[in-house]
Length: 176
Image (cartoon, rainbow, N blue to C red; front, side, top):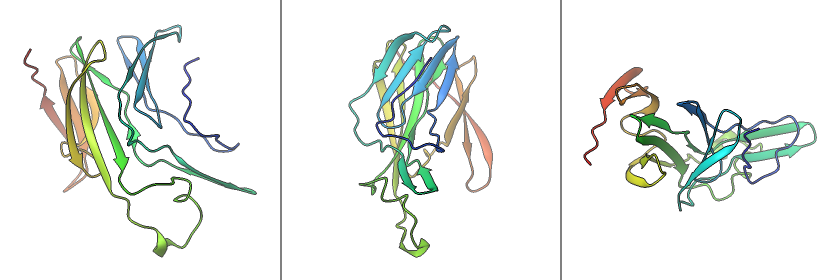
């Protein structure tokens, strides 16, 4: 069984799931609370990990009191997609102004909730897990959009909602 620890006890009645992708029959599971991507074969045996010294990701905030339970994520690390047979691309989002995620989940008056400011990045790795390139941006979603799909030719497709909903296609060219 492929399973990731999120670094906090999750009360009964709440579920938190990592992002998952399948590339060439390899299951990639992105951690929810740290920069770690675990790769599993079809028998769910761990075959490799990609980690990065990056401590800005924030674990989900959890609230539980009596019969009231809540969970909220504050950013994410996406499971990677394979570009050609040599490279992985992934993205991450993190909040700039969340020190205590549990505090932001507690029931409160809506007018007291501070707007969350986000940063994002897109990372390119080689198949061995070596970070080759990162592109950083402001906001919850990258300027090019949220990574949605990579086709067999290595084109990446992204989704954006502003100024109107659209799917964009980009050709990724990697100079060796």
